Length: 139
Picture (cartoon, rainbow, N blue to C red):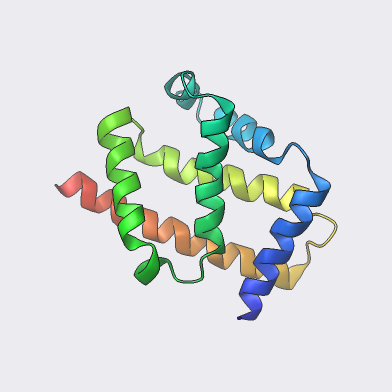
């Protein structure tokens, strides 16, 4: 297991203990940055929203987005844009919301090495999403 993986798991473990409202906080921050997302999600209950967030966390915990998760990312991006009217920017804004809430929720363990590892993983997920978004806009 890479040291980045250990740091990322440490951040999420701490956030799970220290912030019992992690999921609600992510959506609150997301809706503040993307007000147009709230009406798109109005029909989705908390259980489904939590499953959606769990998938993002799963991707962030996956050390190899390109080989192991490429198909899943392609499916999700295409489905959400074409089927639900999600804008490209909403994907990236959601990632930023997760990062912001993770940083504040894991403040007890947040240090330079952990912050760098988490930033690298979020960057990797954002880059993978940008590639999928470009593919969808081309097709």
